[in-house]
Image 1 (cartoon, rainbow, N blue to C red):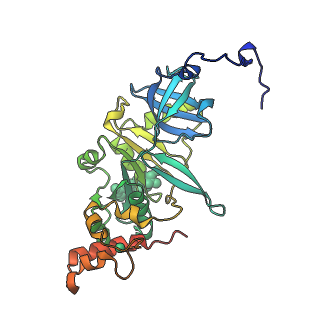
Image 2: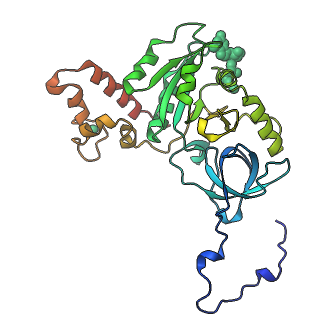
Image 3: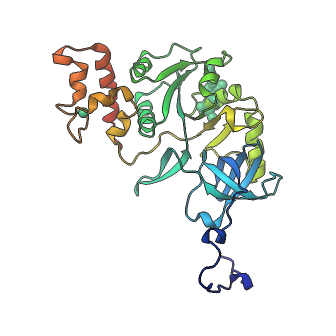
Length: 332
Ligand SMILES: Nc1nc2c(ncn2[C@@H]2O[C@H](COP(=O)(O)OP(=O)(O)O)[C@@H](O)[C@H]2O)c(=O)[nH]1
Ligand SMILES: [Mg+2]
Ligand SMILES: [Zn+2]
């Protein structure tokens, strides 16, 4: 660490009683500009301001250990011009409404938040090549419901074959299942993404990049520009990057976050009540459960709801089975 140079401003003089108000001691940052964090690469953060300017910024020291992740809404001060080589300072990070983290160390169970403030999790699977896998989809669904994020299943490559039937079972959990293939009309997908912050996840090779490039014609340009500003080379394959849907780079049209190389999001443990909270219509039902009900056990009120007096209501039964199979996921 470089040695700090001291000057007279470092000399602390104990103030006499009743000095100026405390709030004046720190800069108020009322001049801070709102920005959205699009990438984080070691100490360098790229943000896009509400006016659509791409700015590189560093955490201000006063933020302390507080982390800054993709999807954060931050306040920046200093050189916010966005010119190459300029550096702004992040002085505030808005409280996160949710976050997704990744296990970075399996042994020590260390988790690192990689994206925050997500509205939708778009789980991309291919109709075939590669085959969709229930396990992966279930893990993503659990993360989404747990964090209060709306999941959507998007099936690509339907030109190669029909989407597997089992994917439609997820509709019993109110999960939308959309289909697409290269060259198809994207207006429905556009509508789903509009105005929201969506994270795209899925196995490599399912067609995420193909989709992003078709949906967002300026995607390559923005990613290139972002890399130019941060000074790093090509976008590293393991980090998330947020791309604005608006060609003017304005926030209001929404954001798509690509997460290459991320297979699943980690959860230290599953809290069944947080998952069930995603299904508002079941809140009355589970209010009749015993305290601390795992919702998979004998006497759970969901069982009676799905089969009142032993008469199975197939639609409810399917729903409960899907829900319970999520609650049953083992987090290794
Ligand atoms: N037949 C077909 N191939 C596709 C489709 N979408 C993507 N691909 C191909 O699948 C491969 C992987 O796509 P890519 O977008 O790189 O997947 P990513 O790893 O999820 O980003 C590429 O060769 C694409 O051309 C599709 O809808 N139909
Ligand atoms: Mg890709
Ligand atoms: Zn229960």
